[in-house]
Length: 283
Image 1 (cartoon, rainbow, N blue to C red):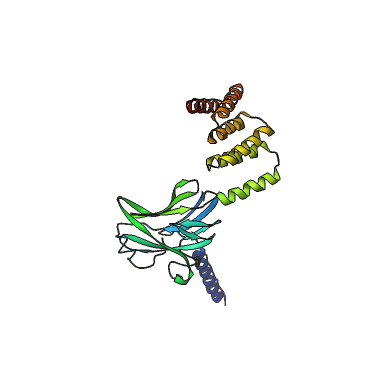
Image 2 (tube, rainbow, N blue to C red):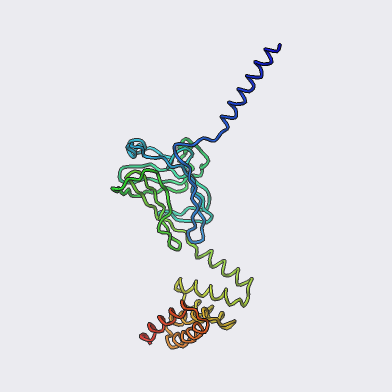
């Protein structure tokens, strides 16, 4: 009886050890990556696994031409964004999607698919595609050992979604327009902060950057009329200049320069002097 209990104890211990071992997290040959990027006012989350070349031939061999590929390793690559976007001119609604790629020698067909929670390309169904487009393949002399997806050239509402591995690079133009959301934010802030000179100045600068000169001047005047600061007076001078009123632009810039000098704030002293020199030639 004692021997039987001892044997039972050994077996239970062994099974317990095996269970614990199977529950351990072990390193994967292809490392996991998670990327967060904001473009305009849109937040992106990209999750994928990154296989390595390891001396192998990749495209046309390890990753066959004309076959659907998971855009990485292990689970399907997923991308999530909280506003509508465009990829190579294709409109895609906000949501979470799997990225699948069908590579060819000179171009890739890239699709976004609603079935993102799957392993590899096993769950791929063309019926679930929400966008499909082609992108040109660029070959390089530089070898990229680890498969890399990244957001490059992030400028205002635009970026490039880049896929790089081995000697291949593929770029996808990405547009995440923020104008509509920005306008909604402006209107909401105006309702909350009636008469807030700082908010009006921020709105004026937004309109200046987007070449809406009438609204830039309107909100610049509202800001300065509420309270004068060297920085919002400078914005008003630039709004006058945008509207071709260089006489008032110079007069207002001189006032901002005087206020900047009194505040001993060198960046605005420099910018006002540069604006004055430029506008006096246009007068």
